[in-house]
Length: 301
Image: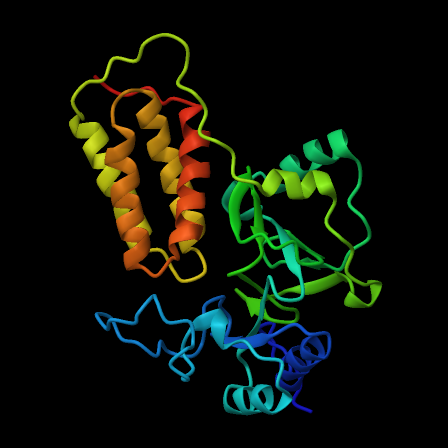
C-alpha cells in the first residue's frame, strides 16, 4: 500500500474504499477533482451546446456532475483506477440527506445551530463528518426536500439535486473525517428541522410607505456585481451564491432602490445559464430575497 504523503494526502486505495463502502450502503459516488469539491469528469456538453445545463445523463455519457454518481462497484473501480487520488462525492437525496454547518470565512453555522438546538433540543445520534474548514455534516434519512442553501444563517441542506464530499477526501491538505461513523445508522430528521426547510414566504413590506425611486448608480452597480458573482460561481457553490445574491439584492428592494422584478428576472436568467434547475433556483431566489427584504440596507443618496 502506498503511504500517505506529507502534505495530508491519503492512500489512493482508501478513497476507492470509501466509494465502495458507500455504495454498499446505497450511497452513489462520483469522482471529484483531487483536493477540491468540483466534479472531475469534464462536462459532456460544451459551452453553447443545447443540452448544457439541461441534460442529467439522459444522453448516456458521463460528464453530468452528481448525475454520474453510481453504486456499481465495477464503475467505481474503473474511475478510481484512472484517477486514484480523486476526491469522493456522494450524491444526496437518494439514500441520505445532509445538514451542512458552515463556518468558512466566518459563516455563523455553529452559532445558529446552537441557538436552534436551545429552542428545539438535541439532534438524534447520526453519522457526522468534520470538514477541513471546521464545519460539520450530519447525515439523515432522505426527506424528499431538495437543496436549501442558507435556510438559516450558516446552515445548508443537501438533499435531492445535491452532494457532499466524503471522508477521507482532502481540501487544502486537510481531510474530511468521520466524527460518528455510518454504523450508527441514519435517523429521521427531526420534524422541527424539516419544517425549517420549507421555503419561507416573502414577508410583507415594512410598515409605512416605501418611496420607489429610480435605480441609483449604486443600486445598478450592486445588481451588476451580484449577477457577475453568480455567473462566475464554481460548480457546487452556484446555488449558495444565488441565495446570497438574492439576499443582498433583497435588502435593496426593501430600501426602495430596486424593484423586485429588476432583481428576480436577471437572477433567474443567470441561474438558468449556469445550469441551475428552475425549481431549485426559484426556491433559492425566493428565500434569499425574502430574508434580505426583512433587513433593508441603507442606500447612499
